[in-house]
Length: 403
Image (cartoon, rainbow, N blue to C red; front, side):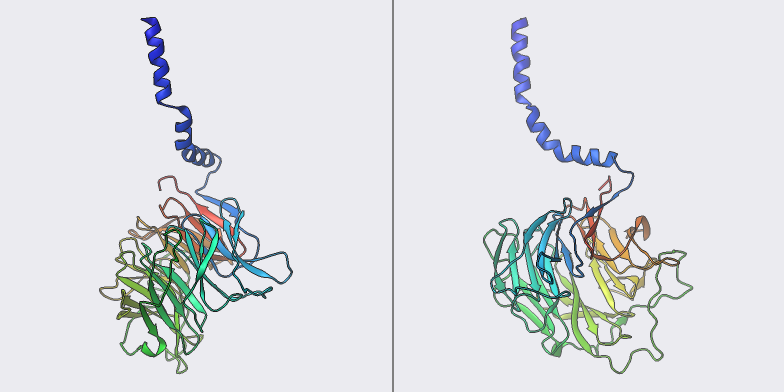
Protein backbone atom coordinates (compact mmCIF):
# COMPACT_ATOMS: atom_id res chain seq x y z
CA UNK A 1 0.00 0.00 0.00
CA UNK A 2 2.76 2.38 0.83
CA UNK A 3 4.39 1.82 -2.53
CA UNK A 4 1.11 2.46 -4.36
CA UNK A 5 0.51 5.74 -2.54
CA UNK A 6 3.97 6.98 -3.45
CA UNK A 7 3.33 6.35 -7.17
CA UNK A 8 -0.01 8.13 -7.02
CA UNK A 9 1.60 11.15 -5.39
CA UNK A 10 4.21 11.29 -8.16
CA UNK A 11 1.52 11.28 -10.84
CA UNK A 12 -0.29 14.22 -9.22
CA UNK A 13 2.90 16.29 -9.35
CA UNK A 14 3.21 15.60 -13.08
CA UNK A 15 -0.38 16.69 -13.78
CA UNK A 16 0.22 20.21 -12.35
CA UNK A 17 3.65 21.24 -13.71
CA UNK A 18 5.16 24.12 -11.80
CA UNK A 19 6.66 25.57 -14.98
CA UNK A 20 3.23 26.08 -16.55
CA UNK A 21 1.93 27.74 -13.40
CA UNK A 22 4.92 30.10 -13.31
CA UNK A 23 4.41 31.11 -16.93
CA UNK A 24 0.72 31.86 -16.42
CA UNK A 25 1.30 33.89 -13.27
CA UNK A 26 4.46 35.73 -14.36
CA UNK A 27 2.62 38.94 -15.23
CA UNK A 28 0.74 38.92 -11.90
CA UNK A 29 3.93 38.33 -9.91
CA UNK A 30 5.78 41.08 -11.76
CA UNK A 31 2.95 43.53 -11.17
CA UNK A 32 2.75 42.59 -7.49
CA UNK A 33 6.46 43.06 -6.85
CA UNK A 34 6.39 46.38 -8.65
CA UNK A 35 3.42 47.59 -6.61
CA UNK A 36 5.20 46.69 -3.34
CA UNK A 37 8.10 48.91 -4.31
CA UNK A 38 6.05 52.08 -4.75
CA UNK A 39 3.51 54.10 -2.84
CA UNK A 40 1.74 55.69 -5.82
CA UNK A 41 -0.37 54.54 -8.75
CA UNK A 42 1.87 56.61 -11.03
CA UNK A 43 5.24 55.54 -12.43
CA UNK A 44 7.57 57.70 -14.51
CA UNK A 45 9.75 56.37 -17.33
CA UNK A 46 11.93 57.83 -20.06
CA UNK A 47 10.26 56.62 -23.27
CA UNK A 48 12.49 58.42 -25.78
CA UNK A 49 14.96 61.28 -26.05
CA UNK A 50 13.97 64.26 -28.14
CA UNK A 51 11.35 66.93 -28.58
CA UNK A 52 8.23 65.80 -30.41
CA UNK A 53 5.11 67.97 -30.39
CA UNK A 54 3.18 65.33 -32.34
CA UNK A 55 3.17 61.77 -31.03
CA UNK A 56 0.74 58.84 -30.79
CA UNK A 57 0.46 56.20 -28.05
CA UNK A 58 -0.62 52.68 -28.96
CA UNK A 59 -3.06 50.60 -26.88
CA UNK A 60 -0.22 48.08 -26.49
CA UNK A 61 2.16 50.48 -24.71
CA UNK A 62 4.25 51.87 -27.56
CA UNK A 63 4.71 55.46 -28.67
CA UNK A 64 5.49 56.81 -32.13
CA UNK A 65 7.22 60.18 -32.15
CA UNK A 66 9.47 62.39 -34.24
CA UNK A 67 12.95 61.66 -32.95
CA UNK A 68 16.46 63.06 -33.47
CA UNK A 69 18.95 60.63 -34.98
CA UNK A 70 22.73 60.58 -35.30
CA UNK A 71 23.06 62.87 -38.32
CA UNK A 72 22.93 66.44 -37.10
CA UNK A 73 19.75 68.23 -38.14
CA UNK A 74 18.02 64.99 -39.10
CA UNK A 75 14.74 63.78 -37.68
CA UNK A 76 12.87 60.52 -38.23
CA UNK A 77 9.64 58.92 -37.10
CA UNK A 78 10.37 56.11 -34.68
CA UNK A 79 8.47 53.70 -32.43
CA UNK A 80 9.56 53.13 -28.82
CA UNK A 81 8.47 50.75 -26.07
CA UNK A 82 7.20 52.92 -23.22
CA UNK A 83 8.17 50.54 -20.41
CA UNK A 84 11.77 49.91 -21.50
CA UNK A 85 12.44 53.04 -23.52
CA UNK A 86 13.96 50.82 -26.23
CA UNK A 87 13.74 51.73 -29.91
CA UNK A 88 11.32 49.24 -31.50
CA UNK A 89 11.45 50.44 -35.09
CA UNK A 90 12.71 53.45 -37.04
CA UNK A 91 10.11 54.06 -39.73
CA UNK A 92 11.57 54.34 -43.21
CA UNK A 93 10.14 54.45 -46.73
CA UNK A 94 11.62 54.62 -50.22
CA UNK A 95 12.40 58.11 -51.48
CA UNK A 96 12.37 59.81 -48.09
CA UNK A 97 14.44 62.95 -47.58
CA UNK A 98 18.01 62.42 -46.37
CA UNK A 99 17.64 65.15 -43.75
CA UNK A 100 14.64 66.97 -42.31
CA UNK A 101 14.54 70.15 -40.26
CA UNK A 102 12.98 70.39 -36.84
CA UNK A 103 9.20 70.80 -36.49
CA UNK A 104 8.49 68.77 -39.63
CA UNK A 105 4.72 68.08 -39.46
CA UNK A 106 3.41 64.62 -38.58
CA UNK A 107 0.01 62.94 -38.20
CA UNK A 108 -0.22 59.46 -36.63
CA UNK A 109 -2.86 56.86 -35.74
CA UNK A 110 -2.63 53.37 -34.22
CA UNK A 111 -5.10 50.60 -35.05
CA UNK A 112 -7.34 49.44 -32.15
CA UNK A 113 -5.15 46.44 -31.31
CA UNK A 114 -1.88 48.28 -31.91
CA UNK A 115 -0.76 46.15 -34.84
CA UNK A 116 -0.83 48.81 -37.57
CA UNK A 117 0.25 52.42 -37.68
CA UNK A 118 -0.82 54.89 -40.37
CA UNK A 119 1.36 57.98 -40.60
CA UNK A 120 1.88 61.13 -42.62
CA UNK A 121 5.17 62.97 -42.20
CA UNK A 122 6.76 65.99 -43.85
CA UNK A 123 9.83 63.98 -44.86
CA UNK A 124 7.78 61.61 -47.05
CA UNK A 125 5.63 61.95 -50.14
CA UNK A 126 2.19 63.48 -49.56
CA UNK A 127 0.43 60.18 -48.93
CA UNK A 128 -0.68 58.11 -45.95
CA UNK A 129 1.90 55.41 -45.12
CA UNK A 130 0.94 52.13 -43.42
CA UNK A 131 3.23 49.98 -41.23
CA UNK A 132 2.75 46.53 -39.67
CA UNK A 133 4.48 46.62 -36.29
CA UNK A 134 4.08 42.88 -35.69
CA UNK A 135 5.94 42.07 -38.90
CA UNK A 136 8.11 45.20 -38.52
CA UNK A 137 7.68 46.34 -42.11
CA UNK A 138 6.33 49.10 -44.32
CA UNK A 139 3.15 48.00 -46.12
CA UNK A 140 2.27 50.66 -48.66
CA UNK A 141 0.58 53.99 -49.30
CA UNK A 142 -2.88 55.35 -49.97
CA UNK A 143 -4.83 58.58 -49.69
CA UNK A 144 -2.67 61.19 -51.39
CA UNK A 145 -3.28 64.73 -50.13
CA UNK A 146 -2.47 68.34 -50.96
CA UNK A 147 -3.31 69.76 -47.52
CA UNK A 148 -1.30 68.04 -44.76
CA UNK A 149 -3.51 66.03 -42.35
CA UNK A 150 -4.28 67.67 -39.03
CA UNK A 151 -5.60 64.46 -37.44
CA UNK A 152 -5.94 60.72 -38.17
CA UNK A 153 -8.25 58.38 -36.26
CA UNK A 154 -9.55 54.81 -36.17
CA UNK A 155 -12.96 53.77 -34.88
CA UNK A 156 -13.40 51.49 -31.84
CA UNK A 157 -13.40 48.16 -33.74
CA UNK A 158 -11.31 49.40 -36.64
CA UNK A 159 -14.24 49.39 -39.06
CA UNK A 160 -13.56 53.00 -40.10
CA UNK A 161 -10.52 55.21 -40.58
CA UNK A 162 -10.70 59.00 -40.99
CA UNK A 163 -8.27 61.74 -42.00
CA UNK A 164 -8.90 65.46 -41.41
CA UNK A 165 -7.07 68.41 -42.96
CA UNK A 166 -7.14 72.19 -42.65
CA UNK A 167 -5.51 75.34 -43.90
CA UNK A 168 -6.33 75.51 -47.61
CA UNK A 169 -8.93 75.16 -50.36
CA UNK A 170 -8.61 71.37 -50.34
CA UNK A 171 -9.18 71.10 -46.57
CA UNK A 172 -11.76 68.55 -45.56
CA UNK A 173 -12.53 65.15 -44.09
CA UNK A 174 -12.22 61.68 -45.66
CA UNK A 175 -13.53 58.36 -44.40
CA UNK A 176 -12.42 54.84 -45.36
CA UNK A 177 -13.69 51.41 -44.40
CA UNK A 178 -10.68 49.51 -43.08
CA UNK A 179 -9.21 46.15 -42.07
CA UNK A 180 -6.72 47.24 -39.41
CA UNK A 181 -5.52 43.99 -37.84
CA UNK A 182 -5.33 41.49 -40.69
CA UNK A 183 -1.85 40.07 -41.35
CA UNK A 184 -0.45 40.85 -44.79
CA UNK A 185 -3.29 43.21 -45.74
CA UNK A 186 -3.21 46.98 -46.12
CA UNK A 187 -5.30 48.39 -43.27
CA UNK A 188 -6.48 51.38 -45.34
CA UNK A 189 -6.64 51.23 -49.12
CA UNK A 190 -8.55 52.42 -52.16
CA UNK A 191 -10.79 55.45 -52.46
CA UNK A 192 -12.55 56.98 -49.46
CA UNK A 193 -16.09 55.77 -48.79
CA UNK A 194 -17.19 59.35 -47.95
CA UNK A 195 -15.75 62.86 -48.15
CA UNK A 196 -16.65 66.26 -46.74
CA UNK A 197 -14.83 69.28 -48.16
CA UNK A 198 -14.69 72.91 -47.13
CA UNK A 199 -17.29 73.93 -49.69
CA UNK A 200 -19.82 71.55 -48.10
CA UNK A 201 -19.37 73.06 -44.64
CA UNK A 202 -22.18 75.35 -43.54
CA UNK A 203 -22.13 77.17 -40.19
CA UNK A 204 -25.49 78.81 -40.79
CA UNK A 205 -27.34 76.09 -38.85
CA UNK A 206 -27.04 78.14 -35.64
CA UNK A 207 -25.30 75.56 -33.46
CA UNK A 208 -25.92 75.39 -29.73
CA UNK A 209 -23.07 77.27 -28.00
CA UNK A 210 -20.87 75.84 -25.28
CA UNK A 211 -21.55 78.18 -22.32
CA UNK A 212 -18.69 80.13 -20.84
CA UNK A 213 -18.01 79.41 -17.19
CA UNK A 214 -18.88 82.33 -14.92
CA UNK A 215 -17.23 83.16 -11.62
CA UNK A 216 -20.42 82.24 -9.77
CA UNK A 217 -20.46 78.79 -11.36
CA UNK A 218 -16.79 78.08 -10.79
CA UNK A 219 -16.15 75.45 -8.08
CA UNK A 220 -13.54 75.83 -5.39
CA UNK A 221 -11.00 73.83 -7.36
CA UNK A 222 -7.43 75.17 -7.61
CA UNK A 223 -6.90 73.36 -10.93
CA UNK A 224 -9.85 74.98 -12.66
CA UNK A 225 -8.62 77.19 -15.49
CA UNK A 226 -10.95 79.94 -16.73
CA UNK A 227 -12.17 79.96 -20.31
CA UNK A 228 -10.43 82.40 -22.63
CA UNK A 229 -12.30 85.73 -22.82
CA UNK A 230 -14.01 86.81 -26.01
CA UNK A 231 -13.33 90.26 -27.48
CA UNK A 232 -16.06 92.90 -27.26
CA UNK A 233 -18.87 92.08 -29.64
CA UNK A 234 -18.20 88.33 -29.73
CA UNK A 235 -17.04 86.85 -33.03
CA UNK A 236 -14.76 88.86 -35.26
CA UNK A 237 -15.54 89.70 -38.87
CA UNK A 238 -12.35 88.04 -40.03
CA UNK A 239 -13.45 84.57 -38.93
CA UNK A 240 -13.54 81.93 -41.63
CA UNK A 241 -13.68 78.14 -41.76
CA UNK A 242 -10.13 76.75 -41.78
CA UNK A 243 -10.83 73.03 -41.97
CA UNK A 244 -11.14 70.10 -39.60
CA UNK A 245 -8.99 69.32 -36.57
CA UNK A 246 -9.30 66.61 -33.92
CA UNK A 247 -11.52 63.60 -34.54
CA UNK A 248 -13.22 61.11 -32.21
CA UNK A 249 -15.36 58.15 -33.27
CA UNK A 250 -18.27 57.29 -30.98
CA UNK A 251 -17.57 53.84 -29.47
CA UNK A 252 -20.72 52.37 -31.08
CA UNK A 253 -19.42 53.72 -34.43
CA UNK A 254 -22.68 55.55 -35.18
CA UNK A 255 -21.18 59.05 -35.22
CA UNK A 256 -17.91 60.89 -35.76
CA UNK A 257 -17.16 64.04 -33.76
CA UNK A 258 -14.98 66.43 -35.74
CA UNK A 259 -13.60 69.80 -34.67
CA UNK A 260 -14.36 72.54 -37.20
CA UNK A 261 -11.46 74.98 -36.87
CA UNK A 262 -12.09 78.70 -37.36
CA UNK A 263 -9.39 81.21 -38.30
CA UNK A 264 -8.46 83.97 -35.88
CA UNK A 265 -6.92 84.28 -32.42
CA UNK A 266 -10.30 85.09 -30.87
CA UNK A 267 -12.30 82.69 -33.01
CA UNK A 268 -14.62 80.03 -31.60
CA UNK A 269 -14.24 76.51 -32.96
CA UNK A 270 -17.18 74.13 -33.31
CA UNK A 271 -17.82 70.41 -32.82
CA UNK A 272 -19.78 68.85 -35.67
CA UNK A 273 -21.42 65.44 -35.20
CA UNK A 274 -21.45 63.42 -38.43
CA UNK A 275 -23.49 60.35 -39.27
CA UNK A 276 -21.57 57.20 -40.14
CA UNK A 277 -20.66 56.33 -42.84
CA UNK A 278 -22.33 59.06 -44.91
CA UNK A 279 -20.70 61.98 -43.00
CA UNK A 280 -24.07 63.74 -43.07
CA UNK A 281 -24.14 66.57 -40.53
CA UNK A 282 -26.47 65.80 -37.59
CA UNK A 283 -25.63 68.49 -35.03
CA UNK A 284 -23.16 71.29 -34.33
CA UNK A 285 -22.01 72.90 -31.06
CA UNK A 286 -19.99 76.09 -30.73
CA UNK A 287 -17.08 76.33 -28.30
CA UNK A 288 -15.66 79.29 -26.39
CA UNK A 289 -12.22 79.54 -28.01
CA UNK A 290 -10.14 76.87 -29.71
CA UNK A 291 -10.87 73.21 -29.05
CA UNK A 292 -7.85 71.16 -27.95
CA UNK A 293 -9.43 67.70 -27.52
CA UNK A 294 -12.63 65.65 -27.84
CA UNK A 295 -13.34 62.20 -26.35
CA UNK A 296 -16.44 59.98 -26.10
CA UNK A 297 -17.41 58.22 -22.89
CA UNK A 298 -17.42 54.42 -23.07
CA UNK A 299 -21.24 54.21 -23.20
CA UNK A 300 -21.39 56.47 -26.31
CA UNK A 301 -23.82 58.80 -24.52
CA UNK A 302 -21.61 61.83 -23.87
CA UNK A 303 -18.82 63.73 -25.55
CA UNK A 304 -16.13 65.45 -23.47
CA UNK A 305 -14.89 68.66 -25.12
CA UNK A 306 -11.78 70.55 -23.97
CA UNK A 307 -11.86 74.18 -25.06
CA UNK A 308 -9.70 77.11 -23.92
CA UNK A 309 -8.56 75.20 -20.83
CA UNK A 310 -12.08 74.22 -19.71
CA UNK A 311 -13.88 70.85 -20.00
CA UNK A 312 -17.49 70.52 -21.17
CA UNK A 313 -19.94 67.64 -21.48
CA UNK A 314 -22.15 67.32 -24.56
CA UNK A 315 -25.10 64.95 -24.87
CA UNK A 316 -25.38 64.61 -28.67
CA UNK A 317 -29.13 63.97 -28.76
CA UNK A 318 -30.36 66.68 -26.42
CA UNK A 319 -29.96 70.09 -24.77
CA UNK A 320 -27.26 72.59 -24.15
CA UNK A 321 -23.65 71.60 -23.38
CA UNK A 322 -22.63 71.65 -19.73
CA UNK A 323 -19.38 73.06 -18.25
CA UNK A 324 -17.68 70.56 -15.96
CA UNK A 325 -16.11 71.33 -12.55
CA UNK A 326 -12.52 70.98 -13.75
CA UNK A 327 -10.18 72.42 -16.35
CA UNK A 328 -8.55 70.21 -18.98
CA UNK A 329 -6.80 70.51 -22.31
CA UNK A 330 -6.51 66.78 -23.05
CA UNK A 331 -8.82 63.92 -22.07
CA UNK A 332 -8.89 60.16 -22.71
CA UNK A 333 -11.91 58.13 -21.59
CA UNK A 334 -11.58 54.61 -20.17
CA UNK A 335 -12.71 51.92 -22.65
CA UNK A 336 -15.10 50.20 -20.18
CA UNK A 337 -15.65 52.44 -17.13
CA UNK A 338 -16.91 56.02 -16.57
CA UNK A 339 -13.39 57.32 -15.93
CA UNK A 340 -11.35 59.99 -17.66
CA UNK A 341 -7.60 60.64 -17.71
CA UNK A 342 -7.06 64.38 -18.12
CA UNK A 343 -4.23 66.89 -18.41
CA UNK A 344 -4.32 70.58 -17.59
CA UNK A 345 -1.24 72.69 -18.23
CA UNK A 346 -2.27 75.57 -15.98
CA UNK A 347 -2.99 75.70 -12.26
CA UNK A 348 -3.97 78.71 -10.21
CA UNK A 349 -0.99 80.06 -8.23
CA UNK A 350 1.39 77.74 -10.11
CA UNK A 351 3.22 77.62 -13.42
CA UNK A 352 2.90 73.83 -13.51
CA UNK A 353 0.15 71.59 -14.75
CA UNK A 354 -1.26 68.28 -13.58
CA UNK A 355 -2.44 64.87 -14.67
CA UNK A 356 -5.52 63.58 -12.93
CA UNK A 357 -8.29 61.00 -13.01
CA UNK A 358 -11.95 62.01 -12.91
CA UNK A 359 -15.02 59.95 -12.08
CA UNK A 360 -17.30 60.97 -14.96
CA UNK A 361 -20.38 59.75 -13.10
CA UNK A 362 -19.91 61.85 -9.96
CA UNK A 363 -17.57 64.39 -11.57
CA UNK A 364 -14.99 63.98 -8.82
CA UNK A 365 -11.28 64.47 -9.44
CA UNK A 366 -8.87 62.01 -7.80
CA UNK A 367 -5.39 60.50 -8.08
CA UNK A 368 -3.57 63.51 -9.48
CA UNK A 369 0.10 64.37 -9.89
CA UNK A 370 2.12 67.32 -11.25
CA UNK A 371 3.10 67.14 -14.92
CA UNK A 372 4.25 69.46 -17.69
CA UNK A 373 4.31 69.37 -21.47
CA UNK A 374 2.02 66.35 -21.98
CA UNK A 375 1.43 65.79 -25.70
CA UNK A 376 -0.65 62.59 -25.68
CA UNK A 377 -2.91 60.42 -23.50
CA UNK A 378 -4.08 56.83 -24.02
CA UNK A 379 -5.64 53.92 -22.12
CA UNK A 380 -4.44 50.40 -22.85
CA UNK A 381 -6.83 48.18 -24.80
CA UNK A 382 -8.01 46.36 -21.64
CA UNK A 383 -8.20 49.55 -19.56
CA UNK A 384 -5.72 48.31 -16.92
CA UNK A 385 -3.11 51.00 -17.67
CA UNK A 386 -3.13 54.61 -18.81
CA UNK A 387 -0.25 56.42 -20.48
CA UNK A 388 0.64 60.11 -20.70
CA UNK A 389 3.73 61.08 -22.72
CA UNK A 390 5.34 64.52 -22.83
CA UNK A 391 6.88 66.07 -25.91
CA UNK A 392 10.32 65.56 -24.30
CA UNK A 393 9.71 61.80 -24.11
CA UNK A 394 8.85 61.42 -20.42
CA UNK A 395 6.09 58.84 -19.84
CA UNK A 396 3.68 58.81 -16.89
CA UNK A 397 2.18 55.35 -16.41
CA UNK A 398 -0.98 54.97 -14.34
CA UNK A 399 -1.73 51.51 -12.93
CA UNK A 400 -4.46 51.55 -10.29
CA UNK A 401 -4.76 48.27 -8.36
CA UNK A 402 -8.50 47.83 -9.00
CA UNK A 403 -8.44 48.24 -12.79
